[in-house]
Length: 272
Image (cartoon, rainbow, N blue to C red):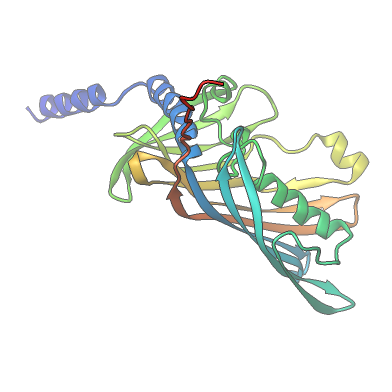
């Protein structure tokens, strides 16, 4: 009798859990709708990029704040503030600027690293600063991956599907996504490089990356629009045999405000 009851419960649970292909198909559809809906919002974005030496000491740290507004394609990003510190001759030099003012500092690999990651987080073709190819949720990105339903669980009081993914090809991301079971929206996604750099690159160029990956959290806002609210990662870099750094990056989106993107056109009734 107990075995029969257990089989019935297991059958009911299986019937209520969709196939992973159906889950990700709904996610892809919602991603397209959500990205369109995000164009009606203005918000603030704060970034922090920290570069540490092999001994753990900060070589360079920079914080930036942007205001993100809708544009015809993607979004427009206005730099509101920029400040930080960098090491020079054993001492830290502080710098700050408002908006796009020059800070008159920065040359070298550390500043180039900070600039590169900051630009990646503020790419003009994205409405939220998140690169689509890092988190394979859209329809076209899903074509490059295999998905597996790993578990059904509870996350922050809501039922979610834990979906694992790996790329078809050698280069790509592997990771897991927590998908809201009611709205089929991602709530938390983690990724790491599926494979390291090719051995030839490591041997010939003395370059390697360890732990390269990111995580992103999503939250539901006005009118059911979901936005990424936090994004970050930490990894180590070795380049050209002598350059060794640990990179920490984080981004937070906040202060979301809906804007009116409609325009009125009036016509004169007077004859020319």
